[in-house]
Length: 255
Length: 256
Image (tube, rainbow over all chains, first blue to last red; front, side):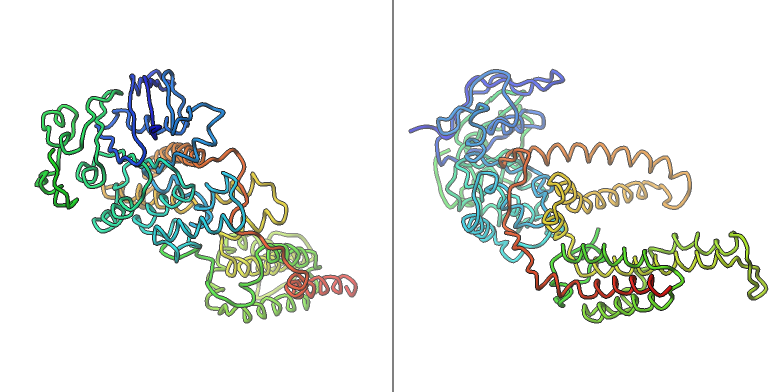
């Protein structure tokens, strides 16, 4: 089966010469839920911006569902890969939530009744139907986060990439978002420092540091490897143990 | 940070005036103000009729005077000049309460005050009955270039975000002992403005990236608001008060 994401030898330097990615190889199967972990400046967000061609690789190849990420495929790729940015105010730029949700699908040529249906389905999935005609400025942080997710879900992406989805959320909004995400079927990539959140949502963890992947395994074994975490400036919050995680997911697997 | 659901000049409601499509109100406002400005200032009666038209619209829109009048204070700075005119302008002069006032100056001041007040009142009426989010689509239906309406809608969206950022920066400054009222704060404010510019610039880049990620290619596609055309009947009905104002202006010229 064609992998959802295939990355080989990806390198990228910013125009100022800073090397953000130093040869990344990563294959993700369709339907997998993968956490991308790492300290600040590890290259996580740069990697995310390559997945839909917003940043162009200096060298290496990327494929989404077997389609190479090159200029002539950008439209197709951007429909397949949905990026949810870390600050919802960056994502929500229209004057009402409904207009914002319609923006993506309309760019991909959806019109008329189909567009209306897409918008109402995405709003309903995020429990935002009654806020459709409000300005994003007047939503709570949790609602704004869900609205940002709705704008991307309305494009019906195969691969959903979220940058720090739990940032600035209160505990309830955080749990509700997790429930929403766990109910989706798309391939999920979550870029985060929030290890318990990653443990709750993902099966596999990829640890990045200095623009390369330093570990790629089952999330249980990554989080159990204290030495690996320390080396990469990651640590579990005080009081959190892996047993909690199995309780959280309601599953008990060897890790 | 605005707690309301819209801009502070908007008064939520569902009156017939609120239901009139925004583009009709914009055109109506422009024509009304034009009629007021074109009226010779000596035709005192006509300004009374204009005021009556506005008051009638406020009644219809259920906007109380107590809501409208404080908001009209926005024109006060512009009136200062008008108040000075009777003292400054030339002959012939008239004596009033021991003051020597210039007659042409008095006329000029009256013209500025009454025309300004009616213009501000008319604009506030449109603002009070039109949510900001309807403006961009209304202007584009009136034929405004897409680029300008995009700029306008981005401004409407981000002005609140910017205002919140400004107030957070101010709070952080004051929390570190900067006194909020003294002159020496000028330097800190100037630096804040610079920081704000950089932050806004960076935000602009991130907003653009997020737009490109959703397939943006330089053109905002038609969205849900299918923009049903405004029927002739709605135009005709909504233009009645404007037509009355134009008629008043025309008669004022004929009988002057």
